[in-house]
Image 1 (cartoon, rainbow, N blue to C red):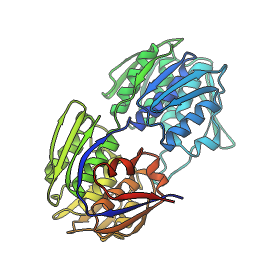
Image 2: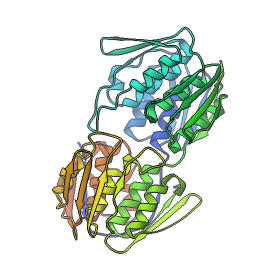
Image 3: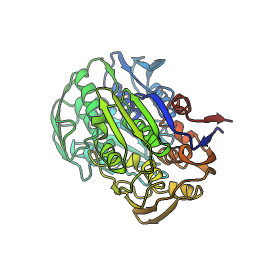
Length: 417
């Protein structure tokens, strides 16, 4: 099992190329199930574990996937299967997104219930209730959910929470359902907008993506398309936080400041100097950050996926900072590991109060999920001495070539077996 060894305390200086967004590429690739025609998806972070799992999911359902660097071609090999294998779903919860395209096209789909994970239960009931509103029936059988509908109907669906996965699943189902479907209280993340652009290129008419009300005018048959995935705002945000913690100056190439408004605002309050233009963001930091409290919220609020690395930055602040998590119920597992590095963090329910320290000390630590791993990476780059991060496979699920990119900006780190 790999580990990352970091000799921290060295400022970052240089440029880093941001990869395509994992959380946009994944549903877009699954949306290729909506058509039998070839699709070409560019700027895909194809080496990530979750993307490789997505390729296996598509092939298990009857597609052929051809990967050439960051370009992925998805081709038809004949009729598609309507059952997602448990062996794949248990590795990646987002596999349930296959339900929408398959149910809309074939009137039947069987998917395993994903279960919980380290950061919370993350139930799929919002997905299922949305399908039921479109006319589907569901039954549970031996750990699977079977959804059936002779024909889904276009209708209005109101989500009880702006779930990213449910919004994506219902958008895909609506794209292959003739008529106008309206999704209210929809997720508004940039990844939703990217999926909407791709569905429009397939032939559906999608409006309002990026707002709380999305409309999809579906078609009985969709065609192939070529699409380029947006840059990964969470990767970009993590690198900005790494530079703010370790200090120095870093320019991110291929990043979009408009996708990170709340984070950039918080970083400026903390004392970072930030400039941006079309396709780039530059941050410079030459002192300890000021204490800035944040509350995670659905987009356009502060991203829950940047809560952990933000907490890592605040361990070095001048004062006390409060971090409140409103999206997931169990997303402070990184706090104990940061404590091993000298951080002072008091967790109570969904809030954590961080008492800033002059510096952190390198230590052996362990990642519990993708973003917790990112927090430990940020802390390790800023800490004095050597930090060893175990279970680096969590980081590999969301960050492509992470040690190579950071080393290019002057970080001293290496991957070891």
